[in-house]
Length: 413
Image (cartoon, rainbow, N blue to C red; front, side, top):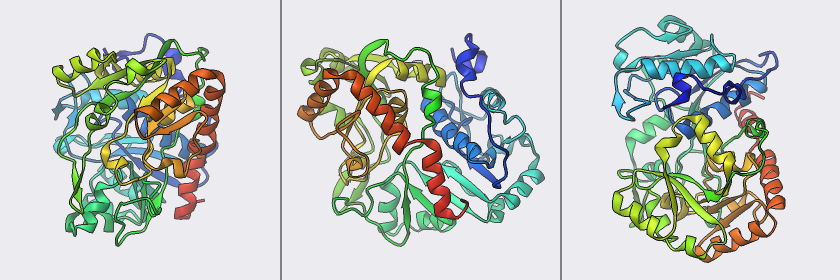
């Protein structure tokens, strides 16, 4: 059962989101995201890390979901026009963060009036007054009334596919991107000599996932309870593969995990995956190769997701081939949560090692041998690598640092 929808039995966990903020003297910004429409685990933290950073930097922050698309039911995980539970979920977040009067939700199919702090006219006025609107995860499609926004900021968390679409002459994608004044991407290795992502027509500003470290250090239990390296993943995706120069770059993790199928038999530490979107035969194959598995649906509640990460020894994970093959430099917004919790991360190389230091607390690997080497190194001095993981989170992924750098790029700081 999703405790964020029914009320957490331990209110102290949810209270970690509460905090004090400076007066909002730097202007008004709107954040578009998928907090209510996609009420699952990591998606919530992705949005909240941007919101908390903007507020701590002194902005008047509004959270808005302005789409008329169906939402995902938080219990059945199916698309639905029914949105009451999703709004309840959103309200809980907004209230605890002191934003009870700073959110707006458009019901699916425009079936009902807007829900939240303003009606349609009030939302139009907010768009005209806002200094910027951030489209996190490129989640929000543009509507005619968005023409009034003077500074639209695209925040692309999934690089490569859009750049390939532009290079192939996709007029629809170009029309979308033309509507934004600033284009940010998690493809932080873009333009490097080893990066094969085509960059045409647009100026992409590289960024990385922010994490509010304080949240991940609030618990009194600092030592991992689960003596395993874990990760959270959907095993297989379809429909988002791209082809560039005759090469297929797949947007799915199963191809990369298969290369590591024997890893648990060689590893000095147990390996576990909270996995979804997997067929029974693939699940059995993983178990046969000594992977520990748990259903990822058990972690749809952001607090359970939070506890799972904090209870882990660290993270060992692959990246989608679409990020790996062209050396995009992508980094996971889940992995930064592990780092912020002081949990070392071993992640398949995407080129992020060109930007973020590795070798203590964070490791990139290219094959099973280098993954095993990273596990052995961490296990030889776990305390040192745990401390290094936290330091990397603070220095390179701290939410206020990351978001402030973005704001400087667009002239709001």
